[in-house]
Structures are given as C-alpha cells and as structure tokens.
Image (spheres, rainbow, N blue to C red):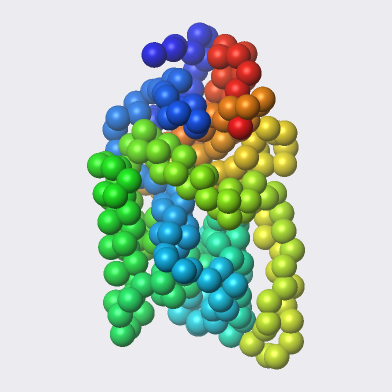
Length: 268
C-alpha cells in the first residue's frame, strides 16, 4: 500500500480509494470502526433512493415533531417550517447539503412503516442496517437516521464508509445533489403561500476545489470532524474518508494533491 511521504494527517481513521474499481490507494487506521455523526445520512439517502418505485416528486408535509427534534438534540437544521410541503427530492437536498436533521427525520417518518412515528423511525433504521448487510458493510451499525438520535452510536470503518459512498455515488440523483454548492428552491408553505428556501453545502471543498464532487460532512462530540469527499481528473475518480480529523479539509487537499501527483491522472 502506498505511503504518503512527509504528510502528517490528523485523521484517526482515513482511506483513499479508486472509485472506479474500489482499489485502496492509501489508508491509515482504516480497519477500526468509528463514530460517523452526519456521515450516517449517506445511508439514509441510499435507503430512500433504493425504495422500489420511490417518487422523488412526492410531497411530504413537514410536521412539528420534525422541526422540534433539531432544538431538542442541538442538531444541524435546514430550518424547515411545519406545514410546508417539500418533495422527497427537496428533502434529500436539505438533508445532504445543510445536513438538516429535520429533513432526515421527515424522510425516515415517510419511508418507514408502522402506525406511529417511532414505529416508522425504528423500521427505517432497521432498513438502514439491512442495507448495510446487503452491501457487505460488516462493521456498519446504525442506531439513528442522522447520527444524532438517542445515543448516536452510528459506527463503521473508513473502509466500509468508502464502500457505502462509492455505492451512493452510482445513483445519479445522489451524485447531482452532493455536487451542488448552493441551491434555492420553492415549496408550498403551510399558510397557503410559497416559501423560498436556500440550502448551502456544508462541504466547503464543493465549489472551491474545482475537481471535487462532494460528498458529506459530519461533526459531533463523539465523532469529531469527519468528511467523505470525491474528486475526478481525466477518466477516473478517487473517493476519500476522514474520520475524527480536526483538519479535515487540509487533509483532504493533501490526499487529493498526492493522488493527482503520485498516481497519475485520476478522475471520472
């Protein structure tokens, strides 16, 4: 496995792979499971997009409980307003760009099964774990739809997170969303008018590092700062994972600079 010369990464767990064939280009602590925080939302999106016949234009009404959960857990918010009706596609944008817990809750509540909200949330989390097993992610365990709910014990190795992200990036809708730096969209408001929302990507590399394609940030007291990123040059793509990394963006740039210089042209 290649060794990064004279590069000091702060990540406690990291991996860089060739997204075309899944080959590991470089790794550091990639076999130890760590907390994921909002990186968990990649799996939330995967489960929603994998539902047979999922209608991305279906409207979902934001409930008071969806909005209240943000303040209760001091989590990231897309500032969704109760009574507003957003499409499933818009909820995916709000969950993956500003990392809204309110959007993740609305999706789990919508796509889970059961008579009560908690029943539906439990079934959705069960579907997340089922999907992890289906994808062969043996280290991945999910206890929430967003990396925050309850104890927030959502864990996986960098290696399995990379495999999950590689799978997610094969979906055109997912890829289009996470490549977006900022979007402004409208939704019917609860008062009968139209509300205009603006959602910005929490990944500062998107829009500032030309070749970067996404993917997702995560931050929490247990997880530290995390980042999943992808970039392309030429005809191949690389994908990286940094878990518990206080300098995640600098480290991502170091890995991308190394990949571009040491491994030849890489990209889509």
